[in-house]
Amino acid sequence: MHDVIIVGAGPTGVWLATELQLQGVQALVLERDNEPTKIVRGLGLHVRSLEMLDQRGILDRFLEAGQTYPVGAQFAGIHKPAAELDTAHPYILGLRQTEVERLLLEHARERGVEIRYGAEVVDIHEGEESVALELASGERLEARWVVGCDGGRSTIRKRLGIQFEGESASNEWLLAEFHVSMPADEVAAIVNEIRKTNLGFGVGPTGTGTYRGVVPAENVTQQATRPTFEEFTRRVRDVAGTDFGAHSPRWLSRFGDATRIAARYRLGQVLLAGDAAHIHPPLGGQGLNLGLQDAFNLGWKLAGEVNGWAPTGLLDTYESERRPVASDVLDNTRAQSELMRLAPGPQAVRRLVSRLMDFPGATRHIMEMVTATGIRYDFGDVDDSIGRRMRDVKLASGQRLYGLMHDGRGLLLDRARQHSIRGWEDRVNHVIDSTDDLGMDAVLLRPDGHIAWVAKGERVDAAPLTRWFGEPSR
Image (cartoon, rainbow, N blue to C red; front, top):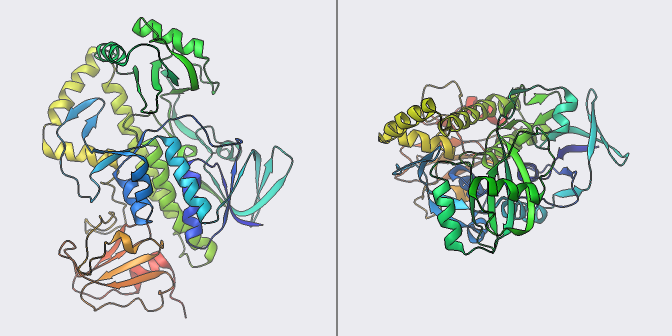
């Protein structure tokens, strides 16, 4: 009997397993494929994801592997001067999803996470106190908890009968990585001209000697079958008048603009995360980041349930917090899709949105929305800071706040030396330090860095500690 089985070894599943292990919960990760995918869907990490990696002490290895770019104000291809974001990491990290996955796998294996490739789950059966999984090999595994991180066509979600609400794809694109024989400057000139009227087309260098191309498909297949290279190059010629001398493909894929969200994120002892819970057009590069942030929110809560200290209802806050966030992402990608249409109506709205983005407040709102730094979970508190994530700050001791969060525990940062966490020392760290950047005498942070309580002249009492960390130890 396993405590937790995670179905799907993509970035969401692997990151979740690592977060659980940090809390002393060993999860088994099952992956249908025989090896990590070579298909590059995501191309970078946004601010909030970078903050999460920093909170766990592994950001440096990602920075070394990628390229940082100043975070900009971009929406549906509309570019505006950036507004200042409240973060110590005001940049985007250009890093192919395959590299993100490689580094997450490296970190997971360092921590002893068990990952089994070639283990396809074909059915799931819920019991009163456990969940059974049937594998294509005939093997049967049981766990107290199962998390489906198995993508948009999730077997777990389908077998449980959880509705995937939203719209089917109305457009489809072909995606590939390949070599070209045409000179780079000629490729760039042709692509730049086409993108003046067709933002759904692109061919550009990957930095590794190959090119990555995306082109609208001839029709919507609603199938997961990969395109042929002949199909891809034919469509490129239809749009560009040339295939750029494309040859020697490394991989091919197709994707659509289907927009769906699971009707519920939890059914009994089974939960959903990442693309298994939500899919949307890849506009703004939010999909990979959204899944990682799901895992960051879920990990410590599920670990609390397994370890026996979670207060009643804590695990249910995963859905109540993360599903609205996903719903907002679906809406903003729907809006971007409309703004990129060439019909007169959408173009009129596009011009209006462009003018509105000239206002700093509107620009900042869009940037915080796409980078996920503007998220505020509803904790039922009127204080606007409660429910928001705390940015990294430098403390008087010379330490950084995020440097104190590597162990995945809660944190009471106290500069007034008036507070106590007696009874919760096994789940919460008490740090006495000060900073001019804090603006408050004390703050209680959840393991995911979101603010659970701030001092308002009173000492911390049992209410916020019990709400998020359960009853005190005797």
